[in-house]
Image 1 (cartoon, rainbow, N blue to C red):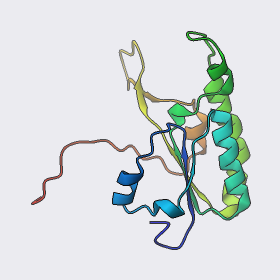
Image 2: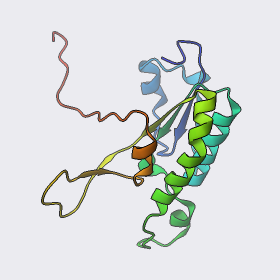
Image 3: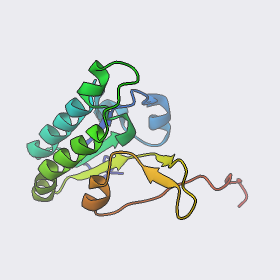
Image 4: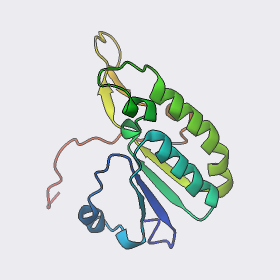
Length: 154
């Protein structure tokens, strides 16, 4: 929709899973879409910061928070425990981005995934990755789920 209104959109594909044919079918003007496939979470968030600061981008989609893997985790060994690393990365990035987003009036959309907390007996066992910073800084949060198929005659 942003492109249809004459705006410039960017897609930070941290998952390296963008299906350009599907995006085209959804109405995305792929040749005009700025696409980045960063190697680390830091790289993704630095690119986002640079795009927002430029003032020439109207909308940025980051897909996804769960795929924003910190460089230290990528360079570490399998099974290394690095608690809170992604949460710290998100917190630092959002502190840096918030003011610039407001000044440039850029729409930034973070796509995230739901995970299940292990051993939760009471309350909601669902959680999102990346710590609490995104919950705190978000202007709007949407929970979108599949609840059934849409039939042609409905």
